[in-house]
Length: 108
Figure 1 (cartoon, rainbow, N blue to C red):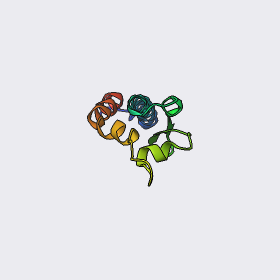
Figure 2: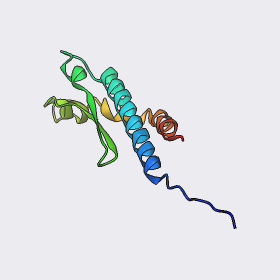
Figure 3: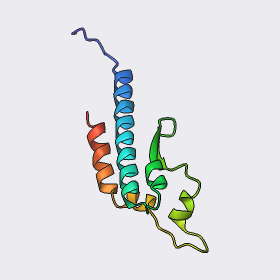
């Protein structure tokens, strides 16, 4: 009977997977923020310049948005102002691209 040793690479695989996921989410977030900025209506440029992204590895998600107080009113509109979506199109119109980024970054 031949001697053999089982080597456990679970931790290395988990680390590589988490790093790949973080990289993918970061790239996707940056691209989505750029697409949203390109679509955002510009008066002073404050909204466009405020768009950013943040990766949460706890939730395995990326958040794209703005801390400008009127950002939701521009995206969704009000009784007095028609909606001018910039975030939703930045996500929906590029889903195929985001999928390719995930696949590329998670390829081992």
